[in-house]
Image (cartoon, rainbow over all chains, first blue to last red; front, side, top):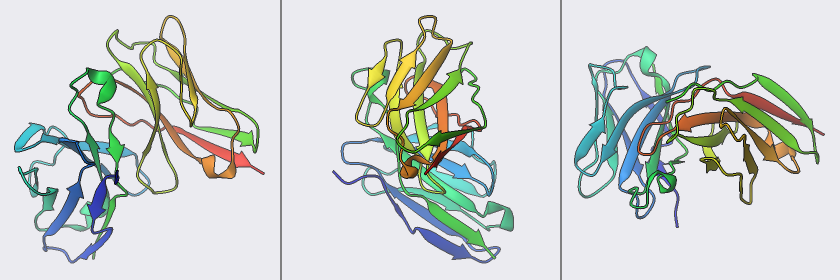
Length: 118
Length: 109
């Protein structure tokens, strides 16, 4: 069973461009979480999605950031008009639906996308 | 989610057991204790979790005190590859993970 996949692993953008980060959850997982890790800082929650639904976006910056998890295909984190402060590692995690209760919805992380804004 | 407190750093000799403590005195009855680690700048790796009983898997053991106010992650035979930042997180099901500062464990040869 393949793990969580993220691509690209490294992404370089110039200020003002758009960045699209993709996350394919583990097989059988329908929940996706995005986290951001700024240089020399801890991981911070951004958004929690289920298929076609945003469940919790309380950690998302109010502007320029959006996320989706369509019925088919990977989850996408989109950053419009990137600025240097967006340079960070973006991690995606997936979990199965908690059909048997919270003990079964452990989050498993992908390798991350390192975004560098020039 | 309940706040957790961990020592900022610990050292351990290779081959010895590494015991990483975590305090979570305000944990609620339905919050699980999760442990993750992050090796260098890789994606966090799930280690183990538990509610109130001690747990063991192929990676580690988790000992939770009877009052659930603290826990200890045990790596029975630490190797150099276990050098990482270890995060203890109190979490109820279906919610985000709130990462603190964690403990930097350094395994020395």
